[in-house]
Image 1 (cartoon, rainbow, N blue to C red):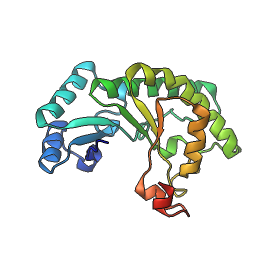
Image 2 (image 1 turned 60 degrees about the horizontal axis):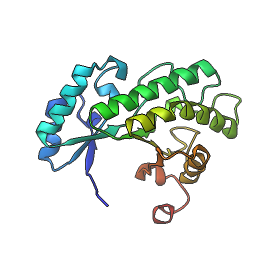
Image 3 (image 1 turned 180 degrees about the vertical axis):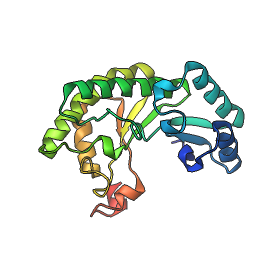
Image 4 (image 1 turned 90 degrees about the vertical axis):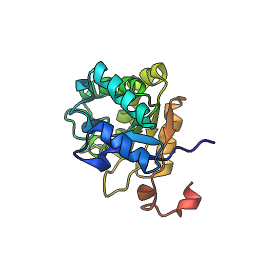
Length: 202
């Protein structure tokens, strides 16, 4: 198994991409995880030319962009659990664009945290919210295959969201998705909120 030690680019607020890549590599990191809002308000605002430049700057620094996270953070109008089919369709389209960008900058992972964009809608049960999320993710799944990226479900603590709070809940959703381009992402902070000890959880 290959391990890539990576750091998130939003650690370096106010820095340009090239400087981030060079500094991260000088600290011994091999990879960079990108929050799209560090590049532009929406990923669709990042041109093909800019994507090529970001990838080249990372490669020149000796670091690899491993993927994107905070996928929907600081955006408006995108919610995977929204009851409105039009909103879910728009969200799926945006996830497809994130997959395209991820591949173009050299990454292959999409880490789905984005707590504000996955909360259970008012009046919906957790099961109903799960069905809504399944619909959104299934609409986007073909793009994940086409671009060769893996969409990773990240459980988050109840203090952040009420949807996908445990490893078991994420595993159950993955089983329902039943798709090779979806996986589980375990975060230490989130695991610390579970009753099960972290070693047992893993």
